[in-house]
Image (tube, rainbow, N blue to C red):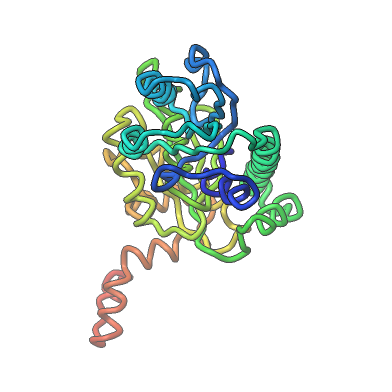
Length: 320
């Protein structure tokens, strides 16, 4: 689980002399920290790391830009540089970092990196632990929905209330997807983390399961639709909206079956459960008491309203 760089900065900005040189943190998500004085090791970064450096004081303008360029190639999440009093970054390099959406921080030579990295590490580890707990809770909610003690408290303790709009989406790839699908899936995961504030996601076989809170189907659809152009080998399905935390297993079931329909029968991507029409009956055969009323509202709702408002009996004609 990554943490917003802005959140990390807020933890230390008033405790230590650390200055943000760029105009913002550019919504960067930080996965880990590294002290990197030798740029030759930059290719070994995994991406989204916050880099600490104390070796650029005597570096030339060209060397400093080369260092930043290497971090950009490695997709680092930001740079914190410790500078002696007589050194600073030029306006040109600061502007360059702004153009690249790359957060640049400077701090005094006396600032203890070890204290800052310890604070950040504790936050990152705690966030990772919380993320793993939420993933376990989501799996329990899907596979053992009646065992409320195994998942409800984990959600409610982490800003997932008992009542809200909960939707599960499924993302998976074609059987004949190219050999880079694992890398693409990692990119999709990062995009989703940056797109949805309240979400939990985990991999299930060849699929990515995504739970969102507080988003409606239209907003999720608007967020996922652009990904279909960038990742044409992937299918995206959106399940039913559930307003009870204890019912998210129903959204999972509808999302998964909708995903299979988008794979084989309905040529639409992303595909929403609410748009599969008569297939809703087949998808929800296990839950007819909840699905049939929903299907009736979606398909016949306008006709029912017309009869009610105009005192006609077209519904009776259908019953006959």
